[in-house]
Length: 210
Image 1 (spheres, helix red, strand yellow):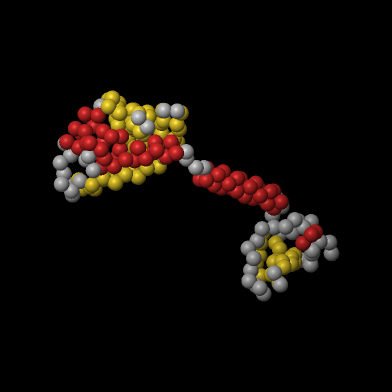
Image 2 (cartoon, rainbow, N blue to C red):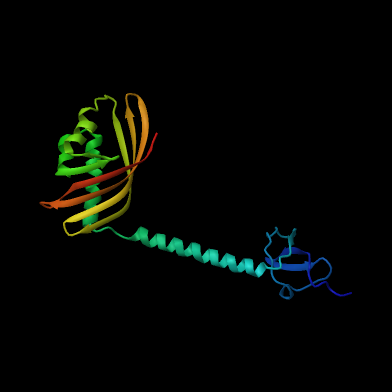
């Protein structure tokens, strides 16, 4: 009796951590047939796996996917390990502290981190420092007001005495007993005045309000 040229099923046994293959009709060595993907059974148990004609192509694709994922992980690790320069850190800290002043309704502290001629572009409107103080501090009289800011800096660049940074900002608010969440994407341009970074331009795009 001739052995069929195309096996339909293979029976797998795991013995001493080595997989031996027995076809449905005749004992065969695994090197006589392409290997197939199959879940391994506990010692002494059997598992049926469907014979794949193109299993070698599947293995090749799996290798490519694995290599690709490793490359992404390695690239992400390199980016995570990149250290910011002292000026880049100072730029980011200036942004964070400016928003801390807003959250604390501190107009004096706000002016420390903003240039006198700051220009703010908020949802199609142009503001100056007085507009910002009026809207964010003077008109905000809620006794229970609380704001918490979370930053995700996307890019920070410094060129001599000019710096700019883009980030995602997520702020949670408590006001008059109600909680809310607002998310923006913003870009800020800063200039260095007397060894201190100050915000010159802020462009804000509202992403979500809830």
